[in-house]
Image 1 (cartoon, rainbow, N blue to C red):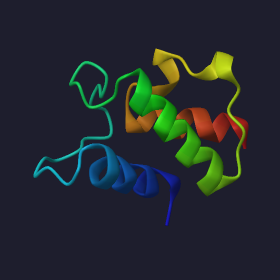
Image 2: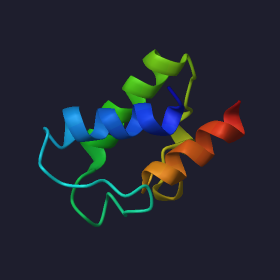
Image 3: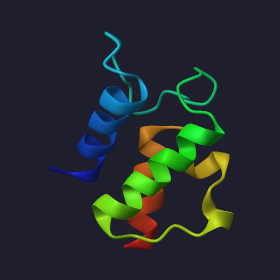
Image 4: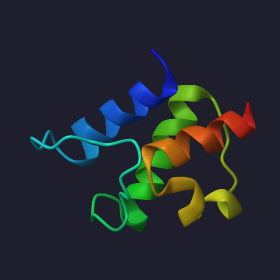
Length: 79
């Protein structure tokens, strides 16, 4: 399964708690209230454990974590 699908599933199932909502890869998750600072840290922990990638604190910024697509693009830069 590709990273985008894994991330989308995690956000829908664990963060959004299975709300019956479509998750567009370009949706601004911060503005929509899906992600806040605590949930972003939860997501970072999940990414590090799942993909074996260490994300430096200074990289946890809006530009890298505002949408599923932004997260995927940031992770591609790390690979």
